[in-house]
Amino acid sequence: MTFNSAWAHLLIDMDGVLWRGSTPLPGLSAFFAALHATERRFMLVTNNSRLTPEQYVTKLARMGITVTTNEVVTSAVGTAEYLRQHACSDRRGSWPGGRNPSAGVGPSARRGDQADKPFDSSPGWSEGV
Image (cartoon, rainbow, N blue to C red; front, side):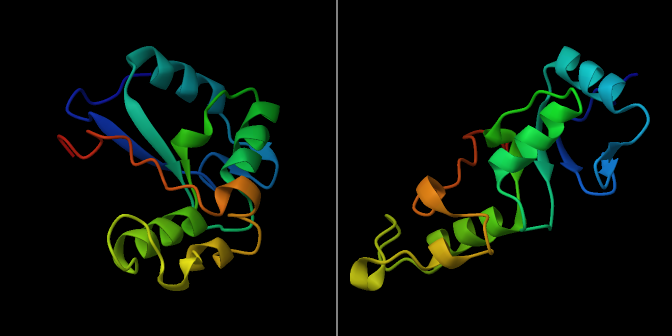
């Protein structure tokens, strides 16, 4: 499998693209083997907010694919980051009243230690996109 050499970064949808339900689509392992071999930067994205990035990492691991939580962005994580960047009172992440409203985004996607954790947009990601 080869990738276009002009593609420095990839955004890859997950649900229905990499798997259906809990069944990986044909070629999934080969795709990730080729992707990792190129050392290209990628993000796995989804508009599904039911699972946390950690749960997606676990789901992929059950399919034999190794990724990190920094490579997974859900709609809840994206929404929370947008709110952090655009709704904060001082751009440093301070919220009026001291409460982070993004902690309530998505039914389960930002619970626990994720509630106040900023999204890591990996500096330099936008270069060449």
